Image (cartoon, rainbow, N blue to C red):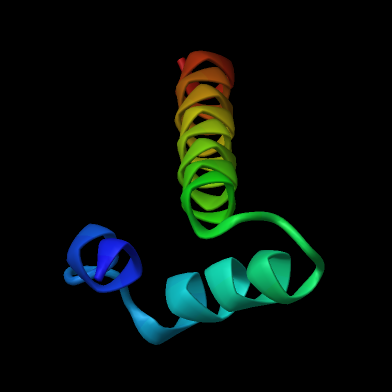
Length: 58
């Protein structure tokens, strides 16, 4: 139930990442949190790269 409710809006790729961490031994709540943090970090990196690219184009 925790897994389904927390990941209701996730795409298949995100679900696969959560399952992967769960199968590696992380409890469900920590697997979900790990993937959420990874996604947040990735998004910030993408935003930073876009910002830097815009700076260089000026």
